[in-house]
Length: 132
Image (tube, rainbow, N blue to C red; front, side, top):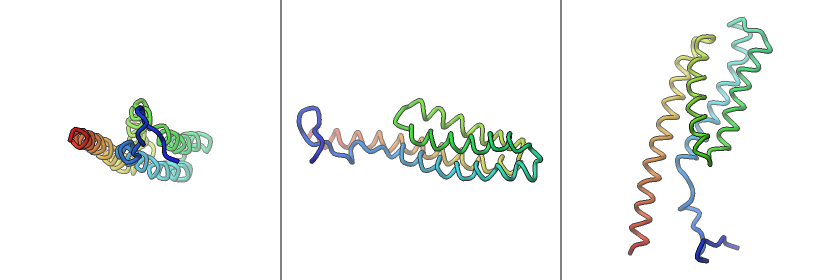
């Protein structure tokens, strides 16, 4: 059974699927793995106490996953930007995170900006198609 649009026409799922959301969610999901793996590094190498390391490392990883699931809201994208800043700032504890945080920030920015561009071009193409 297909969904019905506002005038009773079937809704095309391809038209409503957001490439920005998919790419940003993938970036956050991969970043969650990296942030979770910083926990043992903080404990063993950086001599951070276990409770603080778990709170920061696992906390950021869980926040990434929750944000990836909430990307239907524009506010979640702002939270995604904040996660990128936090990942880079984690470099003050684990030096390698300056690099990895910057890599993920670049991936996030690319996914966000390219996704917005694709959404705009897709909307224009569908509008032109519907006008014919």
